[in-house]
Amino acid sequence: MTTSHVSHILELPLFLDRNANEPLHRQLVTQLREAILQGSISAGTRLPSTRSLALLLHVSRTVTIAAYDELFAEGYIEGRHGSGTYVVEDLSLLKRSPFPSPAGPPRWLRSVEPLLLPRPVVPREAINFRPGTPDMQFFPERTWRELWRQLGHAVPPNAYGEPAGLLELRVEVAAYLGRARGIACQAEDIIITSGATQAVNLIVQATLVPGDTVALEEPGYPLARYAFRASGLHIVPIPVDDDGLDVSQLTNGEAAPYLVYVTPSHQYPLGSRLSSVRRVALLQWAEANDSLVIEDDYDGEFRFHAPPLPALASMDRAGRVVYIGTFSKVLMPGLRVGYLVATAPLRERIARLKRVLDYHVTWPTQYMLAAMLRDGHLERHIRRMRLHYAEKRRQLAEIFAPVASWARLCGLEAGMHVSLALHPALDAYEIAREASARDVYVPTLDEYYTGTPDRNGLLLGYGALDAQQICTGAQTLVELINEHI
Image (cartoon, rainbow, N blue to C red; front, side, top):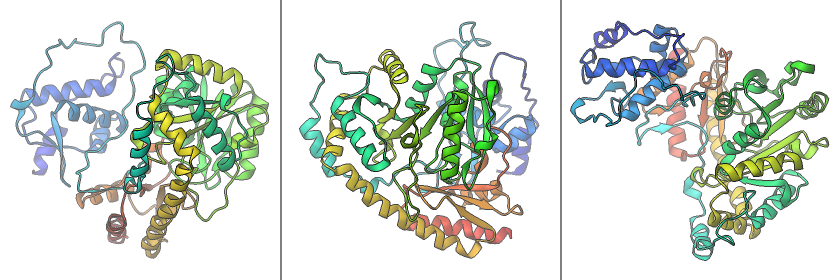
């Protein structure tokens, strides 16, 4: 596809009205869809990158990513292997919905629209460094199948179970947290959730109202940020450095955030750990300002050469911390089972809220997880995977060592991902773009910011990749770095 085709797209009279009720990305979807259907953008035409289009329209890249995602879902555009985004060749295959499309949003559509995560189309055969996925090659399938044979038919008494979760599972989770994280809790302190994201949403809905202020790590976990935005909360980004959240940047008094969300074990996405000094300072700040801390123990199970630091919840003596954990990153993402640990007033409110929303997590799955914890299967699996991920981490460090003065790996102490801090002379976006043309997909750090990014870097999720994929993908990035030096 020639450059002129792309330029033609950039010359289209696209106009986004910031005063309209309709979200900006929806306006963009409507205009691009109509341009495609009317032939202003012909079949097979290459579209500009989300970044180029965002610069042209003077909008956030989140807007253009969300618009492209919707057009992908509707079948108007497609990603081509190492080449970019194109209008589909055969527009005749597109089917119009039988439901009428209103000219604007209806009067009753008043809630904050969920923002979509960046979701690039990655060919199946490509190497994808996107974080958050464990290595399924070592999933204990035989154990899982045997437990399913034994327990898959299990049903709770009276057809429904407790919204807080299966008692046997809560007993085992409490015992596990005592052994692994030093958290002194009982089964009654625990609520089983449909993953960590639901836990965050339940806490927010049970405690805050629209307009309340919350603090979030900057850069930080996108799903937490979107949960706060969807609830109409005011987000204050707090800088992160090599010691984790900069607690000194939290305001005090009436202006203090009602809630602070942190990932202290392996900060998402930079990978740093919240230092002992800052852990104490954060708890003191929370007590002094009557604020709540959500401790998302992201990747807390996978620690390598660094000694473990105590969980905030294990240090909390004032009931200011809600601890969140998940089985999804330990076993498999599709499991969608997590848990939270909270003090009496909050957990009772959350349990009532969960009863209204989805009642409880699937009962047979809870029975199986309880058995895995009780019989030691889960902790054996964690120990095995800790060694496995440590070897992947060692491999990455070895490959990037020759370019360490230009690209520094951060967050090597724990987890299934590392960040790659690039020298200011290097352009993270350009390296990511050129890597995708070579079948290596890697996210840039700017995707994880609430405000203006102040870091130049990439995120390397290695959990789901095998040794050969890590070697090929990392070597490709090193080659690109050397080409740009």
